[in-house]
Every structure is written in structure tokens, then in C-alpha cells.
Length: 132
Image 1 (spheres, rainbow, N blue to C red):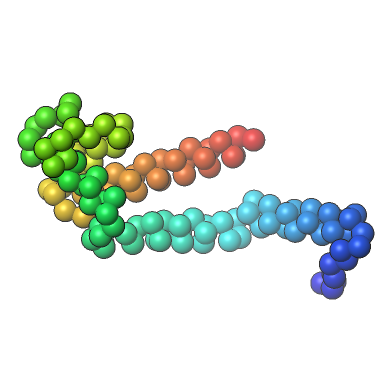
Image 2: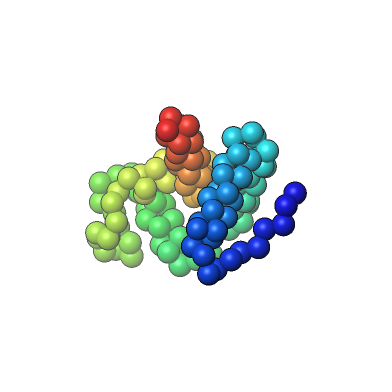
């Protein structure tokens, strides 16, 4: 292992060090060194929120909107405190309301669709990155 020092006076050596570092990171990821651990860590950190209640104001408002859909059966009109809610598209609320129908109205049912879509996005990102 050679000792490399960062020479800021010459741009070639700094660029070379950056390129060498990126090559080492890419090599580590392709040889399956830390990649499975990073994926496991990401899944664990994102999965932990399934077991904690939602206490943030936006999450509570969105949960109430989905609960109103689920309990009233009105899947077209988003209502919050008796008024139309026109700020967001309907799909996330429909998915959450469907989750409430499956699991009941609770924190797990609220967070589960977000985690599922997160994992789907990660899988497609992996497939896209593997393709190129």
C-alpha cells in the first residue's frame, strides 16, 4: 500500500487521486464487497420506521386524508376538516387508504406503502445501473 498525499498545486495529481478513488469504489461495489452490507443497512434503516408512530405534521395530515377515504368510501374527493384538499395528487392517498383497508388504520399501514414503493424504486435503479 503506497502513501498518497493530496497535492493541491497540480491539478493532474488531484484529478488522478479522485479518479483512483472512484475506481476503487467501483471495484469494491462490483466485487460484492460492501454492496450487500450497504443494501442491508439501507433496508434496515428504512424498515425501522415501520415500528414507530408518525408524529410529524405532514404525515398526520396525509394519514387523516387517507383515513377519510378509507372510512367514508369516497375515493374521488379528498377532504380534510370538511374542506376539499387540492394540494396533492390522489394516488398516494389511494394507496395509503388501500393499505388501511388491508391492515387497519395504524402507523404500520401508513408507512408500508412508502417502503414498498421505495424498494421498487431501488430495484429499478439497480436494474438500470446494471444495464449500463
